[in-house]
Length: 284
Image (cartoon, rainbow, N blue to C red; front, top):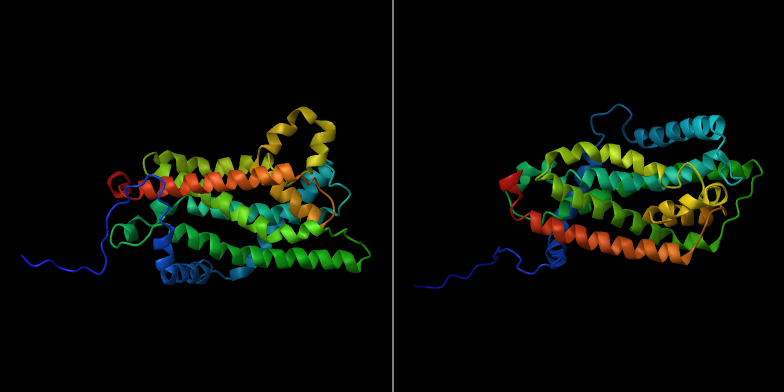
C-alpha cells in the first residue's frame, strides 16, 4: 500500500506544558484578521462609535469625583482628582476588558471552533491586541486632561518610572489574558461561573488602588495593606501614577512580584486552555 504524504498533520499535544506558541505564530495572518474584525465590528452599528471609548471613562471619572472625592472625601495624594482617577481607570479598563472578553472565548466562539481547526489561542490574543486601540484612545484623553492642567499652571512631577510604561501594558495584558483563559476553561464545564465574572471584576476593583492611593491605606489602615499588596495590579497602577504624576508608591519588590505572578498566571492559563480545547466540544 502506498504511503501518502500529508502537508499538515493535526494531532493532540502529549506534553503537559506545551504552550503551542509556535503554531500560533504560523497563524499570525488569522490573528491579524481577528484583530481587524474586533476593531471594525465592535461599534459598527452604533451611533457614537469609538466615542463610547471616551464617554465611559469620562462619566466614570465624574462619578468617582462626586462619590469618592466629594462625599467620601478620600485623598488623592494631592493630585487633581480627574488626573488621579483617569490614571487608575485607564489601567483598570484595559485589564478588565481583556479578562471579561477572554473569559467568554469558548462560549462565544463554539460555532466556529466546532467547524474548523486553528489554534484557539488566536482568539484571546486578538482580544488583548485589539483592546489596545481602546486603551490608546483613553490614553489620549488622559493626556488631554494632563495638558489642560499644565496650561492651568499645574506642574506634574514626571519621574523616570514613566519609562516602565510598556512593561506595565504587558503586565496588564498578561494578567487579563491569564485569568481570562482560566475562567474560560472552567466555564466549559461549570457554566454558572460566567455569571460571577462581572460581579467578581467589580469587587476586584475595590481592592485595587484605583479610587484611593496605597499611601492612604498605609497611613490609616496599615493592618490591611497586605491584602492590597498581594493584588498584582497594585504595583502596576501605582507605578503608572508615580511615573506620569509623580505621586504613588513604588517598590521593586512589589513590581517584581507582579512580573512573576503574571508569568505564572499566563503559563497556567495557556496550559489549561490548550488542555481544555481538545475536548471542550464534548462538554460545552
